[in-house]
Length: 189
Ligand code: HEM
Ligand code: HEM
Image (cartoon, rainbow, N blue to C red; front, side):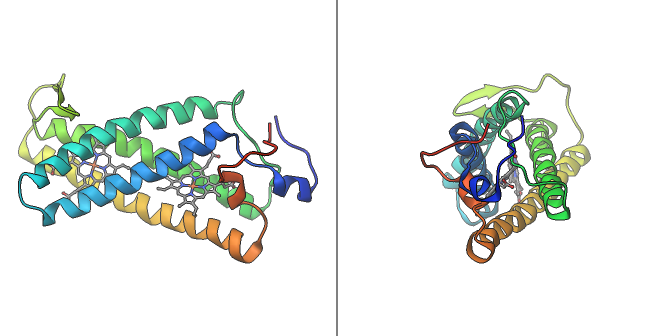
């Protein structure tokens, strides 16, 4: 279903509250994950270990939120906006899809990072052993590297995405950021 409304009405529409909640939960978890990973090197044990365990546990929470988001985004549930086929709308769609693909890859790589280092995953203390055999040090290191690089790509792209959202809000003043705001009002179908 696509909304066919005037620009004025379009600007007053917003994503349904489930989409908004899932978006900000995803954004918060991604920032938390990156922050923990970049900062744990500065902390001695046992704080360091707790941060690594927190990263794995919240990583699995992110996996569940992400899966919910994908199911919710399926055609019957999703909100569409009548942005038209112009270049900006095309670039926005491309950016959103790229973020979805990179996030999915990061979740798989996160799990793989732990298992290829021959350690079980930890979900708030519950240990989840690898169903695969043992891996060489080189394989473990390679997967760690890809997970790290992909994290940086996600943060750079998400930063650009957030900057564009702020540009819409403060310069173009077209209500695009408001679509992702928590508030009551008319939701697009
Ligand atoms: C968007 C989400 C994520 C981001 C941004 C992220 C970021 C990072 C980064 C930057 C590192 C490298 C840290 C370093 O050694 O310098 C790292 C390591 C790691 N990540 Fe993630 N990660 C994410 C999701 C996940 C998930 C879903 C899991 C697993 C459930 C996971 C498990 C791990 C593990 C096990 C390590 C290695 C920890 C160690 O050194 O022992 N990550 N992550
Ligand atoms: C790690 C952080 C973030 C990620 C991974 C992320 C990801 C996404 C994705 C995938 C969408 C597409 C939604 C859909 O159609 O299903 C989206 C939409 C949106 N995001 Fe983010 N986002 C992040 C942070 C932010 C921040 C910080 C802001 C604001 C400053 C923001 C503002 C928006 C807005 C306004 C939309 C709707 C755009 C439109 O309707 O064209 N996002 N985001």
